[in-house]
Image (cartoon, rainbow, N blue to C red; front, side, top):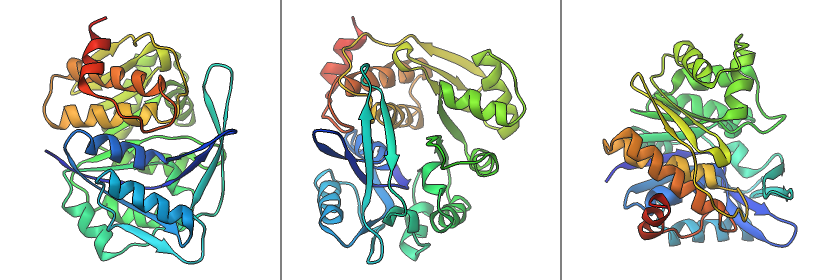
Length: 293
């Protein structure tokens, strides 16, 4: 078992026909907890019905909520999600929301210091309040996982570079790594060369890039590992990368073989994409069955 603390947005994804609970840090937390880990989240919700429902959801999924603050001034997070014909999502992220205003508290600091793994994304840095809290917590964390989550217009190169330099492990999708490498001066079209460029720039020896239906590439302690993806019918892609990351971190921190870890994580991500919403229940039997095809 590992102790993990996730930092950032908790919110409602509102689709044209329904709504689902989400937010990348929460999705990662729920997936990690489903693998028998001890997981806490540092975030904030509004003093409203949606906030209460979010707290109940987290408790039901056994995620520690003592780091979730209640904000009387700002509403609970909401994102309007639009799906294209392939199931890929685009997002309209309401602002400001409670998760933009996460305060630096003793509880947040203790949850960070006592965690084996501290997982954070880039979106929660769009507001100065949550960004300053995150910067302070990064100084306390033992092992830091940065989940790059570019959502225009909520990022800039300076903040991204700081968040990458703080990380022990960085996860991108393929569009994100090429965009950020370009901001930092790389014009390479080679994925491996770009990974090595980022590794050198950030002094990180653990970088993962997800490639959608084409799987993922993992650079871990000087070696590259590949998975070509698994064929599934996509329902929607919301949360698939988050479950992939939670699964990969679970495996790597527990010293699994890196190739086995990326294969297992890709199967998890594919299965999540084959269901609606960010947090479907997926069991090991389904994962093994998909991996064996």
